[in-house]
Image 1 (cartoon, rainbow, N blue to C red):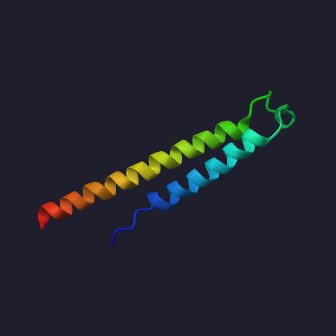
Image 2 (cartoon, rainbow, N blue to C red):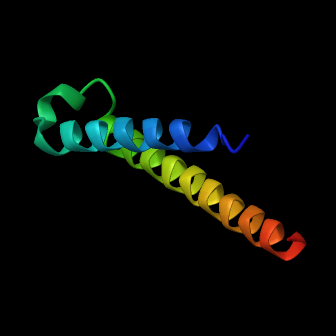
Length: 74
């Protein structure tokens, strides 16, 4: 079975990260007064996006390594 859980989880984090970054870019600064003026949506969206990209990268790398090992055995 060639299912890697990092693929759907990474895709989900990339999607949520993009949504948060987009909302952080278009929202006004007045909603961030309670967070000391820090655009929390923008920064956490960037963190989620980066985590998703790393997760997807590791899944692709594992798939490539697994494919190379399979070809070497055959």
